[in-house]
Amino acid sequence: MLVVMRKDANQKEIEIVCKEIKEMGLAAHPIPGAQRTAIGITGNKNMVREDKIMLLPGVKEIIHVTQPYKLVGREFKPDDTVIETSNVKIGGKKIVIIAGPCAVESREQIIETAFAVKEAGAHILRGGAFKPRTSPYDFQGMGEEGLELLAEAREKTGLLIVTETIDPDNVEIVEKYADILQIGARNMHSFSLLRRVGRSKRPVLLKRGLAATIKEFLMAAEYIMSEGNPNIILCERGVRTFGDHTRFTLDLSAIPVIKELTHLPIIADPSHATGKWQNVTSMARASIAAGADGVMIEVHPHPEFALSDGSQSLTPENFNKLIKEMKIITEAIGKEM
Figure 1 (spheres, rainbow, N blue to C red):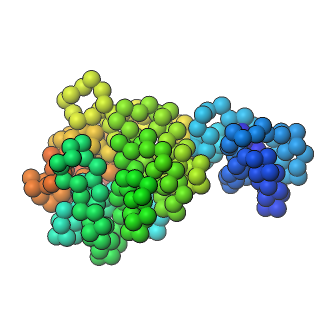
Figure 2: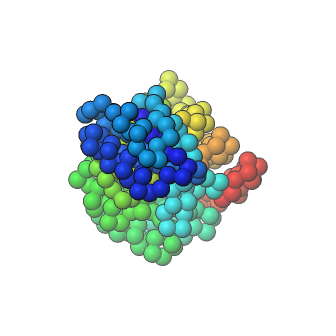
Figure 3: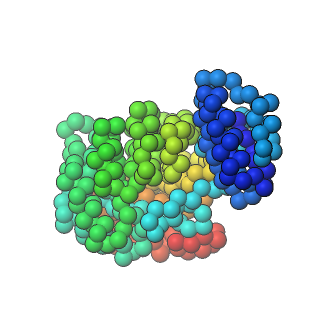
């Protein structure tokens, strides 16, 4: 349910409505807009006294939200959300480029990669310090030492860092180092983890699950936002289908559909989707053309020696070439990098 305030409603009137909603045993979520403020209502403890709310000063109307995802839907917030972190904006007219290795492996590797992607035009450095792998015998990441190396790379290059947190107990340590918390595809349905990052002050990059529908994807984002964190970046990273020609199937059609259903920004991860570096560049270009707000690309200075996902990692030279190609597409659709 959405309470729409009049254009001339002041802050005191908005606070009175929020207070009344909370006294009904529900949660109030003020949503400032370009023309007027709306207040979203969530919770299932009690019924909403619509007649009582309509009598409050500053209230224009009450709208019933039909979608199960309330806070992340465009019915709640028609305007696009633009997430501002330090000097980087995610969403809007600017395309954000996230790049780096699948995993932090050594100081030399992450520093070299950070300088290379920075020079090519990346805005955010990616790299896993904690790696949830399919096999328990695969490289699991460097842990806190990896986080420290990411922080050093940020200090030297000025790039923001995004890295994965794998469970609720792990969030606190990742928060100490990361600018953006990543929820991996395998954890999209880890509801305790979603609620925990929802209480964080850090933006969250949420990856779509391996076989998740768009509705399930947006409901996972709803878990995060319902805890108070509005800064969510969605990531289409491919889903499992009958096709075996690539690692996953990058669902490009999900990008415009999600842009229609939600105000949140969405980026694409063609590296995990294709699993082959030869296919990453074409899918990255296609993602931008489809309307993605950015891409996440795996880059490694020596992919042949990578401890994790070397087959899908671009070399710095190939990444630099990709950036130049994406700039042409970006300009053609009226955006900028």
